Length: 175
Image (tube, rainbow, N blue to C red):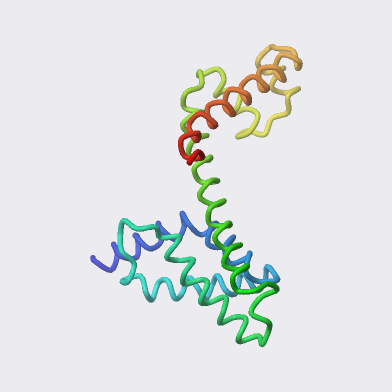
């Protein structure tokens, strides 16, 4: 059973961080196909070295350090320049990608929290628009409202969500 737990832990961590790891890799190589290859190699190495990962630390940062080594190996293997930029620039870009990924994750979490704070009626309207991908015309007909009213309601909800997200992130974005 310990192997099952290890596998489950790895899969959960990798699945939750894969988008950010891919963004990191993609920022370091020229083509999406190369990024896919490097990501696949990185995933295999992450699994092999998963015993070296310290639970409770940032899995994505650890994975990106491994990915950076794979990017360098990729460049050497392809006999390309280390990158289009100096190593310092590549490292700075990579760091920025990680920061942006963390901000995107924080914004997504804040959005989830803010949606939970909406009234049931507002959540229903959002579900119709974004989950069910209904047109405003269909929503208006279903809710017995005018299209203008639906547009105004969606605008109000969007404004409220934006304000809520900004309020939740404010302490994290200020030094």
